Length: 521
Ligand code: FES
Image 1 (cartoon, rainbow, N blue to C red):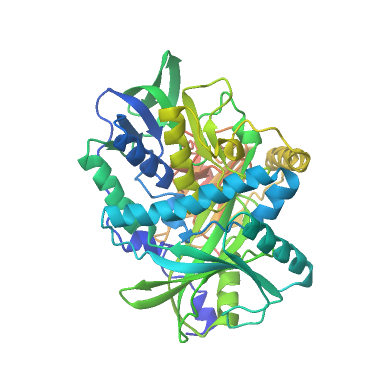
Image 2 (tube, protein in one colour; image 1 turned 180 degrees about the horizontal axis):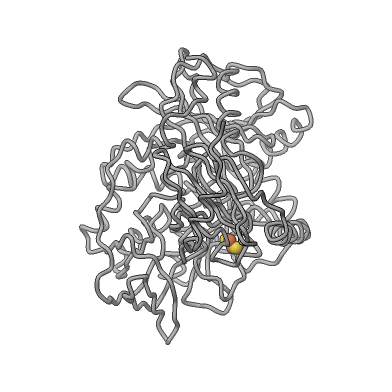
């Protein structure tokens, strides 16, 4: 297959995990309900935490806006590893040995817990022990990687500094963590959700939460107007769908990254890899019914920012061709991650003044072990009032100087995006091919126009319903994405990702917009 054929995408993106498992059909919340703990969000965190609480005799309900496991969990690379970039030297140098130890223990325990649950419930999920590697192609990272190997070893992780890896290209340095693993996340989580339901748990899909009231208990209100009343509330909706206290939108920024699943002439050499450099190139394999797939990931950028997003898939295809003989690319997908200012998740009490409201977010691309660690922390906080790892994950931790600087940088970036969106001049005529979207101006009002494969025009008002930033076109996924806090909307304005809870308005003046769109030559 020639490279330009590889880059001619004829099918929409789809993750291998979702393509190889059935769609769920849990009901919408149809009547009011009372439980001990309500959990907003049916990703890996919500499901595993509900499973753990249910085992403790706590009544729970998972309330999911879309279908469970359809968000970041369904679009991960699914590496089960405590190796999260060069995190341990960073925590040790910027915080303390003790917090680095807590983070290592939480994530190493999560690896073992996934294995134990899979064994206990006899779940077949392609769980395979693997080593995890961070490698570099640049001299400037050699000392950092060497430090990481030493710090990780001092924390009890089996880590080794290397000058070569099994990869088919030379590296300047690498660190290997042993006793890590990979799996098929949906083959693990769908049976886990099933087990939870069989033991009395409740899952409601397509029940987007639009408001939360506090009247002694929490009252969670869905878009259908139904209510869940709960003594305790966990917000595990990825980007928090509730912001009144906590100001999470000033402390979290969303990034998108990309995966291509290739079939190669060569066999994969084994192991899970990530580059220390900016590209964040990542590799692992996965057996499928049609043989071995190699998952090549990376090319992250802030959501709604940057140039033509299709170029990110193209860059991964170029990297794949430099590394292997690519014969086919049966799947490609992208995902969104919540990044925090200091690189550590927020897991625990939503604020120091909300003893019964909890949050889990900000896994920074390392959601497989952080989610299981988070579920364990939240279960422990709810059952016993404390967790051995609560300090390093504490959402109210004191801001350290490096993250204070990042706070300024990120929030200036949001303000810039808000102003830029309002002031940028727009064309009054655009050419639009089928499958393309463009922002256009009509009567001083911005409109987002998308022409579908049948030539039908879909026009939405591109002002984000969260806090009013102007959306940008995402050509790779055919969506309207917000550059401020990462809400994403379909071409008809439906919410794909929060924090927005209201869909986009239709543009009132479609006829005028139609006249402003020229057929391409
Ligand atoms: Fe906050 Fe769009 S997501 S303004």
